[in-house]
Image 1: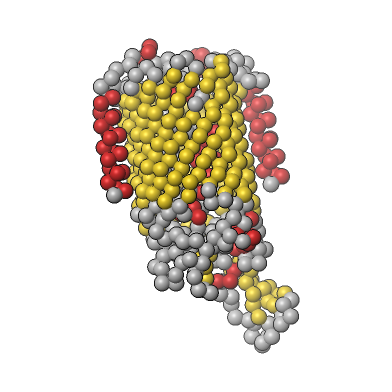
Image 2: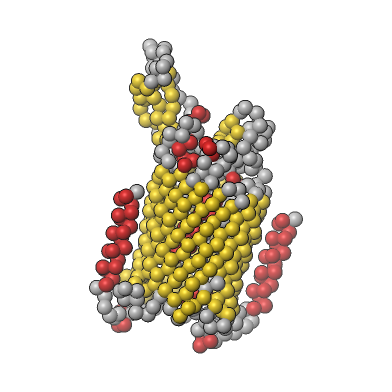
Length: 74
Length: 433
């Protein structure tokens, strides 16, 4: 059941990606998109937080952090 | 600890001083063919945790199960950038991390709580990225090394590729491998001591397991007095490998909205538990953690950023996770950077995490000796966690104090799990350009 809902989520995500990939934004229209706060990734200041979460919680990955290696059994 | 603090303070002053010598940016050097220093980033964090039911004491809710932790983490990244003859941008980033921690539970690797309760971790990294702007492609390779008290080494290697689409999108693919060698440090009561010296029938051998990676054997007389020592023993090790394939796609949706989706496929094999994690059965017996030798993880994450009006940004993140140990979780977070001015912002954030336990987890004295696998590590239990706090970022065009200090960010957060774990974390990032 869990796996089923996971693949539903995956299919929905892929569907959204295809739909939105048709839109076009010109370079001169990207002043907001290129703002440093709009980065689609964790910032360096969050590095230790990601480590803590991966050690204290059983899950990891899909967030730019480590998925294994080193201390802990994650 | 004092040495590490002084080293970090020294590094900060060094970069303040070093970059303060550069008064004007030389625009003619912007596209130099050779690699030149582009950016230096320093991150320091302090983490303070109070908790109980430590994995070392098998989830014991009593005073021996104390799981208080402090951690002082420091990272330095130095980035060099250059362009080759084909006008491709090459970036080389060298990093060094040094962490110092204290962990109350680590002392209980020795049953009487006398093992060393601190440790240091050192981890250098190296990453090279080549960006071809005309083709919209980026390739990269990286290496990582780490050593700590409970493993001999962890070696990481990665390679990545990304390609921009004609519609403001970007596909990314990354392969990562971590190759660890775990020290088999067992709780002291499970270490088999060598026989007593011949001709000394009254002398027995006791074991002393220290969490710093030493097993010491001592000679004890009938009254319990230590009368001699036995030469140090090398601790055996077991491998643990982690392979990750990451797929990502990001897309600019309109002038205010962009999003990305990331899927990781993770396969681990080898020794996936930690040998000093005790397990107490529902009988008088006890042992140490036993977990399967393989694990497959499947996390998928979605990020959406929206620029609301002129000063507010909404940053949402959702992740669904499932693995072959029966553990699943959902993570949702929202961060709202508010631009007080063009170069100064405040970012309150909140993260919610819900986890359902692994089928191999059971609390203190609940596992049966017939169970094929067992752990009482609460990282694999069912729980809910909340993480909230505030970030503060400034990046004025003329720098902070000195022109080269390009940006500064301070972030504080309070983390709590509903299994009696509370923590505070504060981080500082200084970026020099």
